[in-house]
Length: 244
Image (cartoon, rainbow, N blue to C red; front, side, top):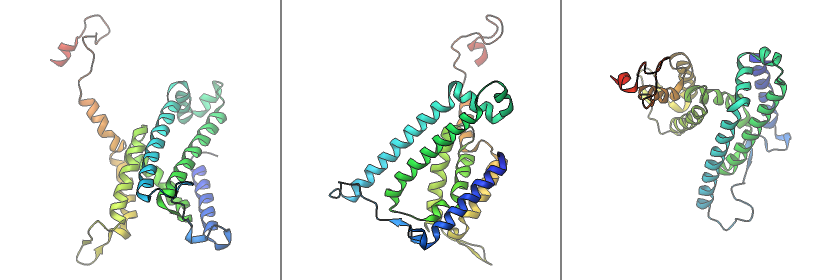
C-alpha cells in the first residue's frame, strides 16, 4: 500500500486513536490530557525560568543533532538509494537493493525523531491532550515542508519555525481584527482557512517555498571557478571572460 492510500490509512488510524484518547475511560484523563510534568526529577529547587532555558537549549541541541543525522542519512549511497526509491521504486528493486529494509529504516528513524520531539515538547508546554494527535497535526508537517521548501532539509526547519511563529501571532489574539463592513474577520477563527489558502498558493505559485529565496541568492552570485576552464577545451572560456 503506497501513495494516497497509505496517507488515508494513516490519517484514519490517527483519528481513531485521538478519538479513543478523548474518552474518559481511556485512563489518560480524556479531554483534559496529561499535565504537571514541568520539572526535571531531582531539580525541584531550580526555578522554572532556568528550566525553561535548559529546555530551550535542549530543543536547539536536538534540532542540531536531528539535522545532522538526517543530512547523513540523505547523503552518499544511502541517500541516492532513497531518492531512487522515491523516483522509481521498481528499478531500484531490480538493481538488487532491499527496498523494504530502506523504507523500514526511514520509518523507524522518523518515528524516533518524532518521539524525541514529543518528549521535549511536553515538559515545555506543561500539558498535552489528545488534540495533539488529531490529523491536523500531521497535515502541519506537509505544510511546513511546502512553505519552507521541498527537497531540502533546511526548508523543513524554516517552514516549521515560520508557520509556528505566524500561528502563535494569529491564534494568540495579537493580529488585529479585519472589519469588512458586512462582517469582521477574527483571525483566531480564520487562521486555519488562511493557512490552507497559503498552502495551496505556495504549492501552485512557489513550489520551492521560502527556501527558493536561497536558491535565487545562490544563482545571483558569480561562479567561483578561479580561472578554471569553463568549456570542453582548454582555455575555451576563462573566469575573466565569463565576467565580461
